[in-house]
View (cartoon, rainbow, N blue to C red):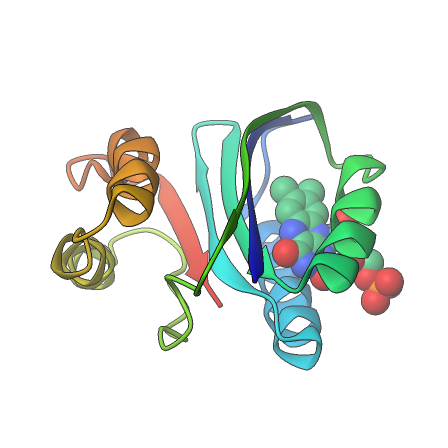
Length: 142
Ligand SMILES: Cc1cc2nc3c(=O)[nH]c(=O)nc-3n(C[C@H](O)[C@H](O)[C@H](O)COP(=O)(O)O)c2cc1C
């Protein structure tokens, strides 16, 4: 079984492109090593992250994330066990401004998989963050 956690949080200050890219790189490298999948989106001072993985690895990671001083108001909005991952095959990095095409890719990917109540729930939670008209968005899927 795969544990899925979704949370939202606020960056402690307005994050610069550079800092965000470093955070995304760290996340991508660590999560690949630990077989954690999901998506991390930053929009206007708010993060939303979906994390999927085996319970022990995910528990350890979430403890680290909760003590990270780069964000606060960490609020878990979903925590459930599911038979399989939603993001298992999606490794595209989405980053920075003006990457509307990659955001469309993410939305298409999710919409194509909106075939179960689990994927529909996750798509619904991400939806407000996938607003393509807002070009101040950064997202990473790993
Ligand atoms: C919003 C946010 C999301 C994060 N997501 C992850 C993540 O998915 N994976 C990860 O390894 N680190 C993530 N981090 C960083 C961790 O809090 C922590 O700094 C990192 O895991 C430490 O890695 P290390 O033990 O290899 O030094 C995140 C940090 C923030 C602020």
